[in-house]
Image (cartoon, one colour):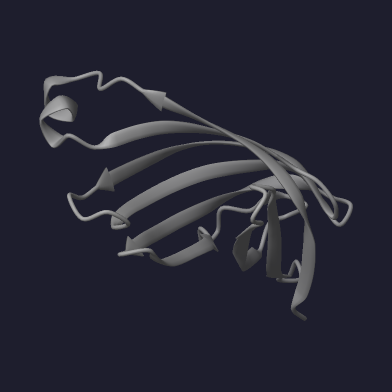
Length: 136
């Protein structure tokens, strides 16, 4: 049975310097992600992002992975979220999905998709639709 949880989250994104000659040549932004989710998902998340800007204002792309650790509706464990985002001249598209079989602890069997909402004042929140397969 699919469930939905919602709530706010705090995020700190920190740019990182390229650490190899190949990373410098790629000319991609690398950033760390430090999040705290609140609500029915009480968790911390740590991750990394790669981003590319283009010469066209409002066009860019990013990919990221974040490991979420905490409680989802009272179940303790962790899972990994995979982000794939693009901006096409200001039009945003973003998918955030649970990496298959990444759920651990009481979150084993978790699958789902998360929607990130950014309010005009910059406040971040999430809508997380998920299922957890029963243990066999």
